Image 1: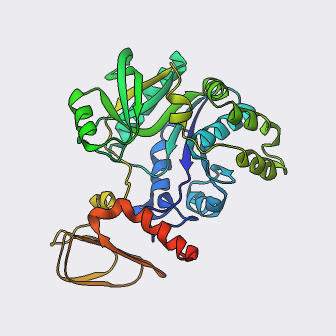
Image 2: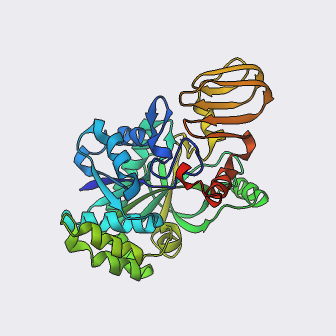
Image 3: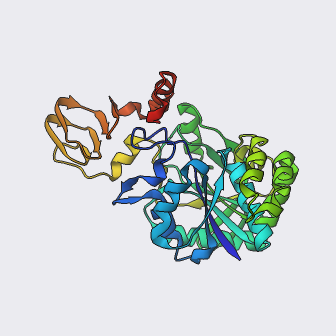
Length: 357
């Protein structure tokens, strides 16, 4: 048995004001008139039967998630009471699948990534699942870096442990959080590091055992919930479970401590679309180099990002700015400051305007 588990949570802060807490980045139409969640499901369907695709989301995002998924038919949606990072998400899905079908090979994928070369993605993922099924190891997909980016985590490869076709699998020797520029440049020069895409493949039995070893409190909480899945008590039992969980990623909680972590180089045109500037690469461009989606009228306007739901955005004599307009909010900023939108959202919350979030 093989399952794809799409991790579809998030706070919706970096793409504010278009994204909100109940409608995060993966549920708004960003690329080609489709949501990133839809695109994620579409590229998985050639590999997985519909009944073997599961989406894990947060309670406040369940309604919008179900609405977006409706066009595909009956995709199972698991709802977390609150977000507790990827360790909880993975433990929940693994415990659910283990209790309903038994041991399986699970691919965990974020819902908010853009992948350009979908055939290559499927080749890498299918081969990676073969590797995990045969070896019992844990696999993460590492993105070959093309620049010294400081916004991603890094994975350092060690000795080669296997090869399948044109893919080589290496032991992981180190996970590194977002580095400073000089460190990132040194990583790039060694050729030993990959960007951490947050895509994982595990056997159900092995990842549950690792969680039991390295995150025993998390394992204990989900063990206590196994008999509630699919029952009227599920929501209340999960709420009590999540109230006791730490907010920790699977990287920090498990992958940094296990000897079974491996990495494979993934070269399929990956982008995590982390802010408005990175998204603008996929927006239509006008003759002045502006990335525009929606109705825009400009004079002496160049190098800008303009996204509007319904309103006409007009600009005069500006360069290198971002304007995002929705029914109830407008964001204007220098485009290079996109990573700071989350700080602006925090200020909006402090000003008592949480209704806009």
